[in-house]
Image (tube, rainbow, N blue to C red):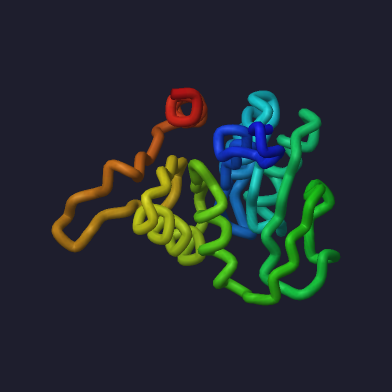
Length: 169
């Protein structure tokens, strides 16, 4: 704490958002669990949409390592959270929670997914939040150019290296 007893920004927890589909193939689930484990081993907080698929796999990976998991839920019940979410945040705002997910994260990891994940990628890039993708939506502007904030990693190992690079710099 600072001299005034208040927490400074440099003392706040590092939050990694993991975004992806509620329905996911085994490769996406394995990647999400590996990312969740990595986040927890680094002492970072895992934030996700709190439900099934990629979100549950990432939460499980973090939970197995003793990590802190936060789920930003779209509905009105904490019972909607997957069993690995330690802190369920009930919003009642549906898909609008996507903005909360990305703005609360220092880095977003996007794994697989569809239009919901694409909206999270777009909100992140628009708001200056880095996105590391794995087998996810491709992000290009109408001029055909991408954003330096969006990197689609070819494999999980390179994704984890890039995550470390961006957060430990």
